[in-house]
Length: 70
Image (cartoon, rainbow, N blue to C red; front, side, top):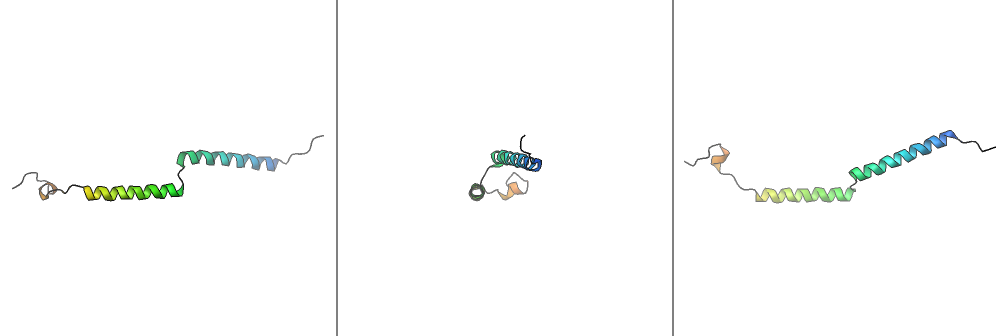
């Protein structure tokens, strides 16, 4: 005669395995570490600052919708 199986343990083990598989799939899909996210955020901020500094100034004529100079 075989030993009895605790079905609650089997159910919980299966749930843990499913949760781990889902976590690994999410890691692949969204898998940046906090350090990598912070680095990307700093890099994007630096690029935006540089781009703002290099933006061409518009003439007051273009800003008013009038392309022609007086």
